[in-house]
Length: 378
Image (cartoon, rainbow, N blue to C red):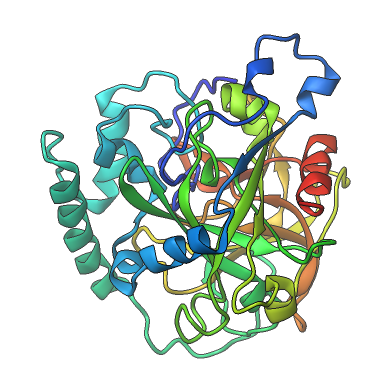
């Protein structure tokens, strides 16, 4: 689908992470020319990531503390990798965007004044240096714990509970550049599944992410506290793989164990549900990395859901100012503020460029359920 209004880089929030190095065509793409009937909408496209113990160790060894620290929100993918491939807006779209769209909507908030002729490595370093300056000014080191709010567009989550462990950062590589996203563990038969945005797994019609690694509870004492988990197998819906359709911007990933333990046994899980009633109260979580956030703290938005006012998608919107890096973070209903447990019914997906205060997330219908059913038995 094509949105009439350009998306923000934060939109796909893919941001953070959209996609690791593209690894090539996924099984099932040869069906792309068949009619788009109901069965096709529920088609599952799979990618085998780190299959062996040796491959998984290579992925984990890749993510040194320095690389993690320098990974950029996915919204900079086009800038860092010369604009080919991924949607300039972080959502897997491939429509043409003007230079004005890119500079005014993606880079101006940073005040970077980036020169497009810079080499990828030099540009990434330059952007990182500038981002650190913003972060140093915006970081709140000693925020006191306070009762969670039921209506906020972006607050630090300081009260712990299950959500602080089950939500984590995703690190991935795309076209030689490193990025970040957010994700959450979910209760599954294999005890290995995390849910995130589709654009944090596969670049729409492009390639798959490489070096895909989930770090739960990233803000709680560092990346090693609960281990790091490499992806074994990745799954997206057919419409996302064929056309970057935002209605299907959901990804499910089956993780390898860490130290011989399944992620669910280490940090616990959230419930997941499909075909829920629309509207209602939701809490969205993630690790936004663009200023004024720095990617080191779990942040949440809370409020009531509303339909896409542009009618461009079946997604629902949540008042939320989280920035790039929060893509793929879980949206929980029936959320218990005391325990930090709830039911995931969507993930952060995109924003419209003329409304940075509203995040949109895909409706978890039958296609998302088919993805989950496949991933939990992978």
